[in-house]
Image (tube, rainbow, N blue to C red; front, side, top):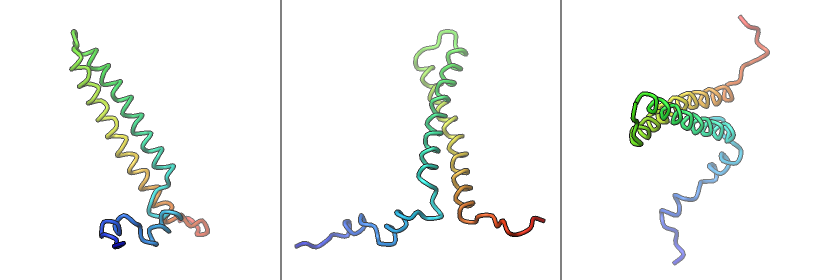
Length: 109
């Protein structure tokens, strides 16, 4: 009665997956790069919310709380979305650079 169910097999990584997770795969960005990218997106979202709040406050003469919250939400989404696009492109470029490093011994043309 100690049989494993298929769900248990899916949760345990294969030996190759363990090796990739420990040694790091050249197609995966480093953990510190991903953490910095996520922090950049969060900070951009906070600043975008502040800017959206301020623009909604300035543009309305008698700004209600709902207008301010909508302005903050739109600002946060736009800013975080833009930084997310840049962060993904940077992480992809870092992985590509690490996978195919430049050859320094060849002369430039």
